[in-house]
Image (cartoon, rainbow over all chains, first blue to last red; front, side):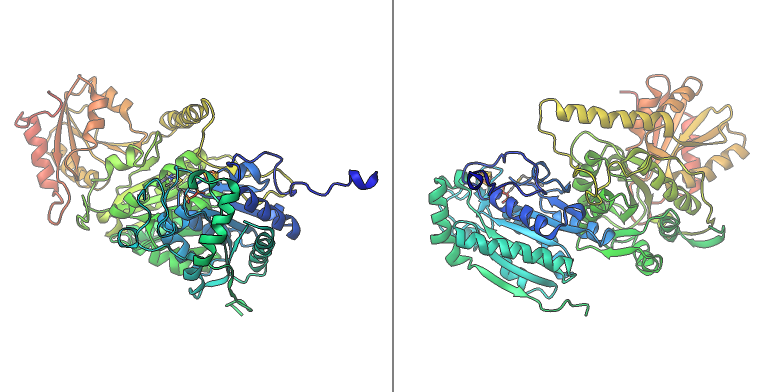
Length: 254
Length: 363
Ligand SMILES: Cc1ncc(C[n+]2csc(CCOP(=O)(O)OP(=O)(O)O)c2C)c(N)n1
Ligand code: SF4
């Protein structure tokens, strides 16, 4: 009997007991949870400050029981830079979508990475603008139809899908860069490790840590949750390969 | 702090005053005619344990300001013309977030790239909110290097008092000219503690949020009215202006900042010659001294507004005056060689007195 009553699953302590507003099959909720688990594992709830971006994840503060600042669209790396500079002992993370980080906020993320700002970035690549109704993002795959690329993305018109992790990794200032996915348990477990490691890098003062997560947006992709996971496996991962792209062994200031 | 008399540029006075006011954080991007401010602070802030960071753009600078302000720290940025335009989205967020910070606009001439000469063309932008949505920022307009110092210190207190961005609207003339000034501490303005809202990590308390998004039923309206209450309080408690030779005037010159500085000489000369002329100089451009203008308009028939633009503050003078008096305008919209001399303003005063000018409020 005791065995049956054993609790095997609960929300991370750093998260509020509130149901997610995300669409069914959306991966934002899974990644939120992975962030919450990392905060719990490292015991850093009381010094963590999150910066939410504008996109489907804008309600970060509804789900995390940590201090949260809402940044304008694309600018979270600037807010995080200042927070971490003012409060160097805090643990700062930002959570951005691909419209936010790879389009309107390209300058801010590149320069924060290049300065080696010591905070953690969770970057959700769902290949479109979820919140505004599924328009094309810089990460939209070639041929992919979106609300603003109804004929399918064509490199002659819209250019190529941008590989942010590769760009960030080649900047001298970045310390840890990885790309994961949560479309199946094996990928999820690796992504969980990447996120934990990214926070550990920050705590050790190693510098800029960045985790990209390939995420499903079944609603705007017009797929079922299962089809969306398969789409990530079949279409996204071959173009956006998973794994650790960079891990510095010693911080630059040593 | 020991009071000293210093001979320096207005920009340096602002930078020094920021440190004296306890500001340890500065984020900004170079632009003429204000670059002395970041240059000075890049040297001096590290010496007081502060942070100077040259951002990649003014967009980034204002968002860094937002982030630092959210921790409760005193923080400042400075820019001019195009840079201030780029900051407007962030300023709107900060007003919505109720975050205090000081934003210095050592304004230059526009529109577009315009030029680097002194101008007051940013009056509307500064006093009407500037960015999107229903908000105001407090605006202080110095007219001397001493006031660049004084108002910077005041601006930090006022920002904290109202939890709102405060703009110092100076211009290239005030920023670049050298004058003696005293490093005095003005009367402190009390402000509430920040520990009830600042984001510092949720130690021993639930997490808190600083945001401007309100999607619930009636939520945003409530929030906007709450902001508005602060603007009403600013009007009651912190409207400031200076009166110069204003006894029994036949004509009132209204001017702020550099224009007021030049107009003062013109008014003085006209007085010496026996003309009953005085100057009203708004110090806070928001809140604006409408009430004082209204009072004066009950006795005075003529108001001459002098501005370094094509006519912006004159609209506020018209609001204050209503239908009681005649409003005249003399403007010199920016550009090299366009700064009026005291003689030119003197001539406008005389022309107005002799009914040789057409009032702008007779439609
Ligand atoms: C300056 C500005 N431009 C545009 C918008 C509208 N907008 C809100 S969210 C968004 C895109 C969000 O997409 P993404 O960052 O990919 O996040 P997702 O919703 O997919 O998680 C846009 C364009 C805005 N809020 N602000
Ligand atoms: S629109 Fe897409 S990204 Fe947004 S919540 Fe729904 S599934 Fe998730």
